[in-house]
Image (cartoon, rainbow, N blue to C red):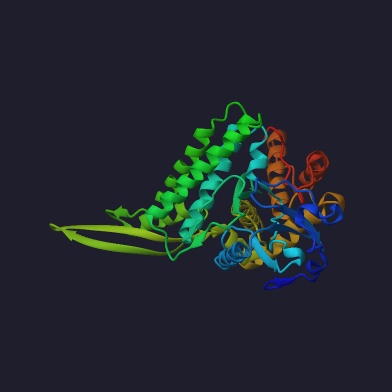
Length: 400
């Protein structure tokens, strides 16, 4: 047996590598939902971490491992590659080991339940945004599908992650033709999977498979245009530039630089500007810089809104000092209030966001601010205790 890894968990060595994955004993496995795969995939839990183990050919495993490592260096929304295990006894196929993304589910698992139209729209937005972010990095996926995507809750929306990169390729920049090809592959795959769900009676009767696949492409094209088009500036360039950057920040994208060109045409001066957009994270990075908390973009936005409100109420002029006090006096006490038996139901940032929303609803009903402490106790007793455990499987309400 040969293990290739940047950082090997010693416990990996003790797994039954001389046995085919499909015959692994149950005491090594964790039951988690997964999409359709052409390979045998198993989930194992070692020292509190869950790993996905996939049997494949060595060349494919090495290529996907290298691609996932490259995407990790670019801070792309993708799963983390851990190791390749090759030269297994009995000429068994090598395996690729990736870290399971906590609090996540395949899109297919969510589409297998009745969804409200608003929830479906948030899912399509997340998938379109994932494709845009990968394309901005120069990554050609080649096999975007519901089964190759994972989602996590993100403060009322969803964040999407690439989970299978074996058909991908990383380039300095994608051409329009490459992007169009990737979009067409996504459209075909999503349409086919939606038809499968429909044939199995797992797709809600109001969902049209063709419309779902077309809508992902439409949302992608809308977002791509917003992020990349050259904007004509007739006057007050500074204000228009600021408004454009703020609009992009609200979509969750940072602007690294802005290029401007000035053209004189028959005595008229025409100015165009185009922002250079980098990966998502305007709010995530600000939250990390101020508090050290790692959250999804919409979660970070909600947490920062609460932090800013706290800063205004406490009249602390220094942003860093206010952030430290908010973290120790507000955020951490809320999460410490959760009994140990309930801490696997929601990750800390999402729990805090839902507590904030619960406080708002209670205050609206009461006609006054009920306060944070009563809202926390009400949320624990009336909401959280009834939720499924999301540490292994991201639960959701059937009507959500």
